[in-house]
Image (tube, rainbow, N blue to C red; front, side):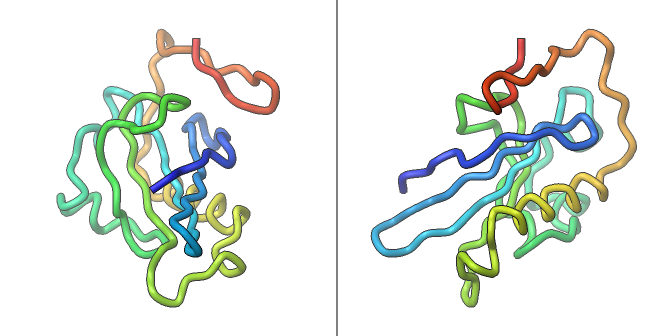
Length: 128
């Protein structure tokens, strides 16, 4: 399925990515949050209790190494491709709000001082 990155943003020091997936006449968005190394949930499977209990649209449907070159690392995420979902209900703004709600449920974590810097670059965030 072709997937297009719509936006990369930062919230509470976490990187987020919203994608638009299009398969023929069907399309849906997904939201992902990058977990830094050392985070208590880093490397957890989406089937593990603490991950599966996070409340987000449709539940967590992705917990693995990133498949996006723009945001390498470990991601947890969700999709808006469930029965009854549509692009009006699951707008980019809605998916962004869901990413933020997901982050708000994560345990407190301080990103180490030696972690890569994130700087804006032409409207996108780029790690160096």
